[in-house]
Amino acid sequence: MDAGNLTGSCTYQIDAQDRIDYVGGDWVAFARANQAAASCFPDQVIGRPLWDFIDGMETRHLYHVVLKKVRSLQLAVKLPFRCDAPDRRRFLELLITPVSPDRLQFMSTLLREELRDPLAILLVDAQRSEELIKMCSMCKRIETPLDTCWSEVEEALAALAVFNADRVPQITHGICPDCLLQARKTLFDLPGKKP
Ligand SMILES: [Zn+2]
Figure 1 (cartoon, rainbow, N blue to C red):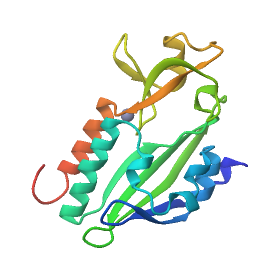
Figure 2: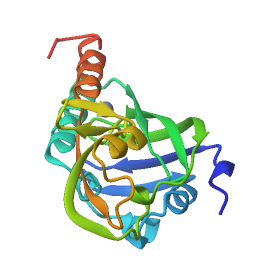
Figure 3: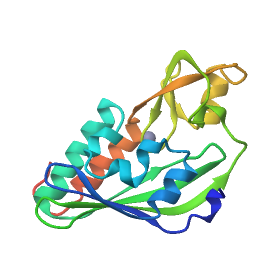
């Protein structure tokens, strides 16, 4: 499949209990392009809680804060994020819109892509070591604990000296300080009561 053909948007909606009850747009194309597990295809997604698909405590917390804000203010929020494939950086925008008092729509739109040499660490079926590295759920950069900075995957792997390893590390997810600040600023700039 040529992931470069992705042009549209991927849409899903959640009900008052945060269960996904609608998926549309390029959802299937996105899932395929990202080598998503079978559990990410629409027939496996409908009826399941949104939280089944959000990995990492920090990421879940950020989503909880954002969703609460969108529901209480009934205002849309737009957040930049990355949804990389092994062979490309993919820059997207997530628009979270209130459809009714409790119902929310998520629409992710592809803004641009950059090709790169494929990265084994992003393959769904890669052989993994016991080592853990933390990736930001939003910008997909990786934390390098020694200098406590967040770098593009390629730079981080080189810095962590796992570039030529037979097995790639396992990925855990969090939110980097830059993305946290950006999300807080987005929420703070919304009209109405300040968080
Ligand atoms: Zn980030």
